[in-house]
Length: 189
Image 1 (cartoon, helix red, strand yellow):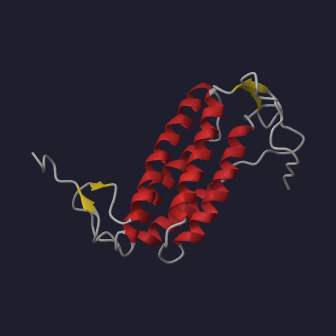
Image 2 (tube, rainbow, N blue to C red; image 1 turned 30 degrees about the vertical axis):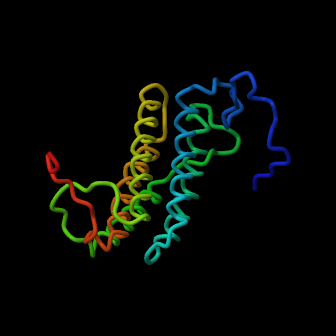
């Protein structure tokens, strides 16, 4: 359990912060940027979850928000050849598999895609599309970090699958795709 007695510590006033292993790094480091992006994604999903959503979608988004805290914790503790006394929290393949089951479940009743889809339609769909685009950007930030430092491979896979799920959820919120806003190439020239 986490206990926060005081919100401000002044420890970051000089532009440095602690990672989960207590290493001090600049707040501009790729690692901080990566898990800061995860925090932003979690907030955007929280906004989408405030909408009236069909079926089990709200409960699934709540599980995803918790998973994203796990993912941030994973990124906060760099992988190391020296195992810490307490094993760090890591994203697991089972978390990715759960996303895949949800994608398959939501996809069953969707209208077939006949064009690319513009982000929009219902307010819930628009917010889920926004979350999807933030998720793609966060995934790129994690991959950029992985180019420089070791990162749990499951983190990138989870984010990749999550963006797919958010796309499918947005379509569900557009009357199972019947109210999707379709791209018309060169349509308004």
